[in-house]
Image (cartoon, rainbow, N blue to C red; front, side, top):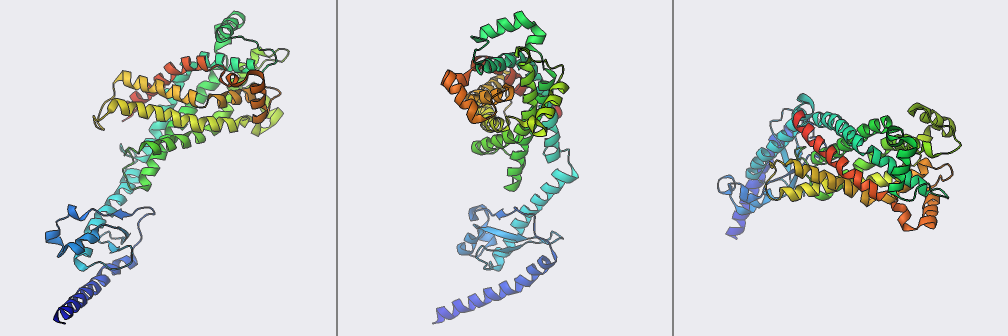
Length: 415
């Protein structure tokens, strides 16, 4: 009986203390504002806190281990803490909790303000990240395109040739020989370069920009620093989103490029005289949406291909880094090898989608995905979907290696 009375008294005393503390904590919250959406605090384990001095018992200390909601007043002097079940914490815990959560809240608030608004060009700034990825990506993309363009011309011509009743070329070597003999070096292999040069700059800047921003936004939503490395699976997802975003820029660019690359092969038709001539013809014949002819297959290719592109690059670098830590400086050959692996992964992963896309964009008769799939399979079997893969792998190794190496070096200069 005596023990029960003591327990009851202690409970009443604790409740009274909690009630006394509640108005003091709640008052500023009524006039304050809640923290930005998505910011929550997961507090530290009790073992990380000196419970012998801060808490009267282990039972009360254990209440540190849960997710709590925060109401932060505008003066940022306090935080009101409530447990997940709505019960008030004991006064000693509530005080300790308030200090800990206020530290988290203040850090999060300062991160949002200082890094993204007050100091937009700091090393860990969303704006700085955006500008850097756009500029650096544009330059590295253009450099990569200069290297790969002649090989790409051969690939597109081989794919177009396979779509004809009587193919023009019998092999990659036959295509290179006939192109050089009939059209020379520039007109044969480099015709239409300005369009893909511009397109490569737009494509690379969009790929690097959307990939990095997707990672930044995930980190922000999780309350992390924006440059914190994400798990590999989340980086693959960011690569996929990057490819989907970029496909809308890439489709019209590749349509113009492909039309110019096969233009000299079309007998009995007036040749295009310029990029503008191609665009005007498409707009006249098919309207504005005609510029996005092949969008579906481009999106499929870019979604999976870009995930493989960044995934192979990141995985290869992870293998080189091993357990050397985040400050490890990659050697030149490691960046080049990782870039080459990225190019191989991109092209091997969804090459059939690229074949279908190129036939749709260059054929005068084939307009639908299903129609092209059926036509290629009946005429050439499964191998028909991989026409030009050999020359593509040859061109993608130096081009992708150059792109990623220049990207990393330019990033160092920017920072």
